[in-house]
Length: 139
Image (cartoon, rainbow, N blue to C red):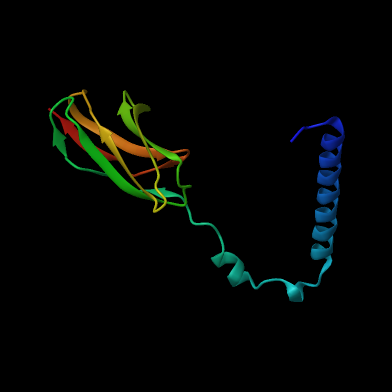
């Protein structure tokens, strides 16, 4: 399809008209009596689920630079978005180069190799949502 200036103007005009009609419809809905509004209990049950992440390492102790897995489930997060492993270093959370996509069922699984010997505080994050802290000791 060839895009012309005329077609672009038609699309823009259609968008403006659609927005205007939605605004008028929204005003009409706002002006209806409260008797037609949904009951408060129904409105509360339709609220989106609060985002949460669980995390479980396949081991609690591992040799340095040996592969282990972290698996878990998410709720309230979009399928396909990424979860990332973070490690507490010098009192700050640092994102490590270990991430995985969230499946349609809300689960994830990622492979991890750690080299920092000792007890490692770890968590899984996606955006502002974080899992509870879990520990893996590297020997």
